Amino acid sequence: MTCQPSKPFGRPREWDRDQIAHDLIEWAKRDDSINLNAFCCTREPPLDPCKLSNWAKEDDYFRQVFRATKSFLAVRREQWLTTEKLHQAAYNRTSKVYDVFEKEEAREEYAYQKEIDAKVGKEINQNANVDVKERLDATLNQLSELQSSLIIAKSKIKSDEKS
Image 1 (cartoon, rainbow, N blue to C red):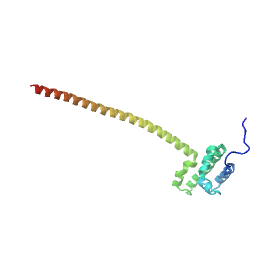
Image 2 (image 1 turned 30 degrees about the vertical axis):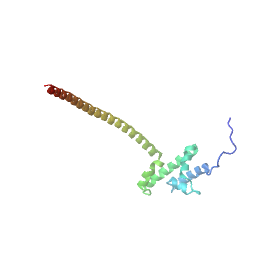
Image 3 (image 1 turned 180 degrees about the vertical axis):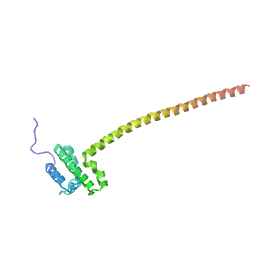
Image 4 (image 1 turned 180 degrees about the horizontal axis):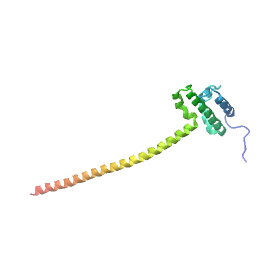
């Protein structure tokens, strides 16, 4: 059995995560909510956006709320895009931040591309190795022919000197 301290150790929390999680969902349901930074900077005092990401990594409940919030925003951002309230470039820059499906698709595509690049790179290396080997063999053959010619030339010089 473990002992639970009556008071947490260390510096007290500056923020109530459960309250922020509740506020985050309520904020995400609003029709004008499209960007997590807006939630952070409209709080008093302003909330460091990194805290949201860190809390999502540390706390399962907050992670679920954070993902749900992103889903609300992803839907709204896409709606705004189709009604031209949001510019295509702004949507494209950050769509993977909010849309989990797009993010997963991008990861799969990236992994597939890396796999193809690795295969192509391996083939290129093999082809390059064959090409390098062929050039090396040709160079060694030339060197061998030159050595043979040198030996023949030296023996002719010696035979000419004797005669």
